[in-house]
Image (cartoon, rainbow, N blue to C red):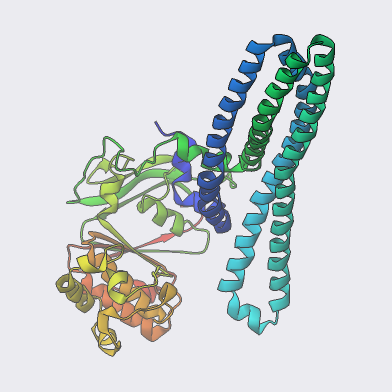
Length: 459
């Protein structure tokens, strides 16, 4: 079973509370370090431990007293050095984690805030921040390199000291030169192999200590199977024939003791067009996220045809809904790829694509594009207007046969003319079979609704 911590981290609240740069760092740096550092270091560690163990076992069998003398001479020095290096490595681990976060942060801020940075003449300010983080990364890597090289030098010095000590002991123990030469030969051969092996062991341990934050980051993923994994069991399908509703729901954010919604119920019949209004903080967005299945209420239920939406049927519920928000997410691809979101270009149904383009009032826009639906619209839809993005969002929902269509402040950033065009487009798709739920600030966006629900902070 997936723990409650993991379940909560899967919903939208996780991304609201977690800086996106942390997510980027964890996905990019943590996974890369796990594969290139943690796995490789573990393999090297196990391999070299076996080699050193076999060599020491051979020495113990040959002469147990010499073996004990070797341990007494080497163990204290290597142990003290290892403890010191471990402390430094753990410190470097935290510094690496923090510095990787800052590099991602300043880099993305420079990209996304390019216009504001240029106009406000703050290039030097952001450049210095990024340069400082890169310089810190270089310093951390230099220190890491030193801690990786240092073990071999310490071990070489320690083993030379041990061999000198054993040689002195051998002169006393073995009056015969032949026996003494055998002993020296044994330790020269053993030392020749033990020195690099022991050095590799400490380097591997050092690398694992420096990557300790990776384990903490990936531990939930490694221990628990994702709820959305194809292997997840007991998934069920649900039908939508009658209604969608929230029944006596209460929800409060962790940092706010007062519930944003308390004992709230709403019943929406299939085919209805429902508008939701309210001032900021009245709970509109929270209600929308609960209806979308992105947030689990503290009490009460989300239902479809009187069946409670649970983790088992949530995927089936998602297949029935479409979502058009204020900033419709666009991939860096063609218009066709953005409407048939997540489908390979060769698998797009162009006949269906043409139909949804007509229904969402995109036909005139497509005619103006140099390559029609195969025109690239840029990263995050940089080459299309806000109103066109909303229509693309509508077309996307229709392409995937959405039965319930959510509009979350979809027209709030548009001018009056464009708002009217989007409102008309919504009216075009309101055929009595599609259930539409609209959140808006302006009543003009809700003029085609069957009902308007106005929220305030009390109910």
